[in-house]
Image (cartoon, rainbow, N blue to C red; front, side, top):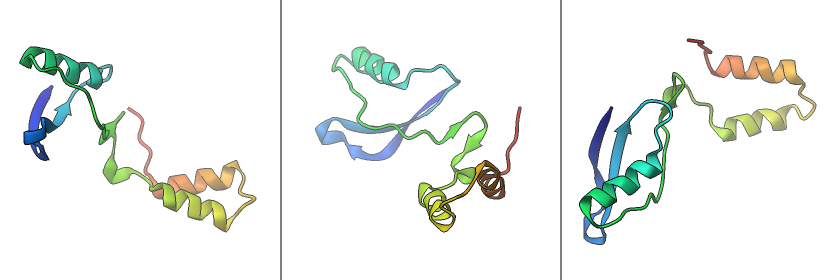
Amino acid sequence: HALELLEGGDPEAGEYRLRVLCSKGTYIRTLCHDLGQALGCGAALAGLRRTQAAGFGLDRAVRLEDVLAAANRDVNADYENWSNFLESQVEFSWK
């Protein structure tokens, strides 16, 4: 587990950006609340960006625009066509 204070945010307004490395089951909103309690000022989560989950990272993500473009190319796409499209975009790995 790790917690890192990032550049950005607006410290004058009490806004900070954090990077959290955690295991599954970690409640980030609760972590934010608990940090605020520990600092004596309260805290709330304004945004959350998940960069990795279940072994998949952003480097292997498929953009929604690409999926929608593929759907527009073949309105009558069946499951097999979609499965082939996804497999061509992402190398699946099971751990």
